[in-house]
Length: 89
Length: 418
Image 1 (cartoon, helix red, strand yellow):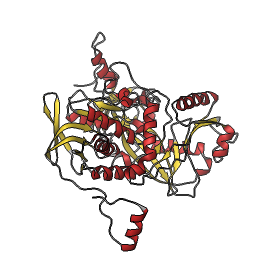
Image 2 (spheres, chains in turn orange, red):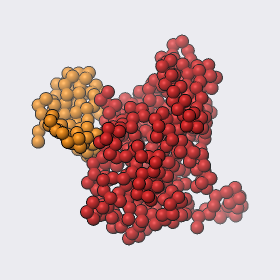
Image 3 (cartoon, chains in turn green, orange):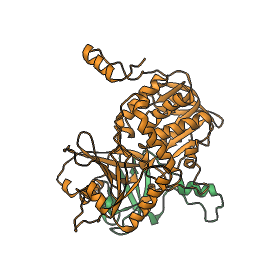
Image 4 (tube, one colour):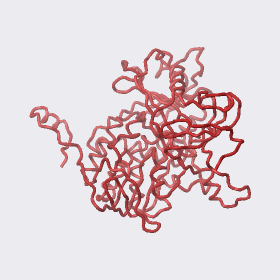
């Protein structure tokens, strides 16, 4: 069972969370007119085998969006922090 | 020269005790090929076979990182069918089913096609209307389809939950009699043997580590067994499409997710058909050994672990019992997970890539196994003629750019966002 360390609620089963996908993507600027930039943002995935930074929402807990570090090759979970605090470089 | 398999050959070997020759030739890499196919799974081997058979391209190598057939071709639930709704899918999967029907003779290898019929269940009147529409589309395309009412389903499948207390009452179903199951390992072995016979080099334990480039043209691959030049290079590595494409500097609309499958302890013949639940994604059949084989949805987040999460085991078991209450005390013998390419619209990519002479076949979501013969057939055509086969034009890598997403079921990797 994948267990996610929620900063508010402690370590919980992943079934309490909703998965939100890759958190390392940057949304194009709102006035971006290049279709390919939007295409790449919406449809294309880096899909790494290894470290992955991703969104999870604790829907059955504090309802906060988190950013979790997880290794997709092993499912080993690293730290989780609040998404609203922003993504460090 | 491979020995032809027949009843006579079987009798001869039984009487003389002569050893059977190796089914296919173990090859070492040559410096250059007309076509190099990366990935020795069902699709890669089928592509090699049809390149040699249909297009007389015989200087072909299939490179496999591990051993052939060790990926998803041996990890699926072995179902074949052609009950698709969207124009394009209907014809493509029917082409595949027709190839399945002749495959044992074509390859001189028994792939044990069992056309036991598949029934998709409807649990409400509107769902039955949807199935009626799909059945009509199939029949207009010359594909067999029969709409069943509740009584007809009960006559065929009396062991389903037809009680007053059924969580999902059964209103009817859509039967495709020509659908069924195939012995999946035999598909890899059969295509490998037949391709090898036509001169294709199958090279195991040969991992691709990079692409040789000349400007925007791919001229071969760098492998763990040295450089191999190629006029054309084809990627057929579903599950790891992103990794291999990244070696060529490409990013693709694919995420790798886990799909689990399950087998119970063997029981006497009981489930005579393939049954698809209509209330959840769940499908069940019985193997020749007697085990009930079933599967469900992807786990829901991208992973390469090949180990499924336990809550999905519970969900799938709940589906099984909601559908067939009498199997509630069967024990699960095994469950396993395959790494599956998931695409945003749930449809695959076959065709050219932005790089010249590099071709891609991947993103098969839930449908890779049943598509094996047609995917190989069409991919071989695409490689040989440097343009997409008409049956796969709608599976282009660039389709989202033009707003032409091709969504049959809504089963892409975005289920987690619904």
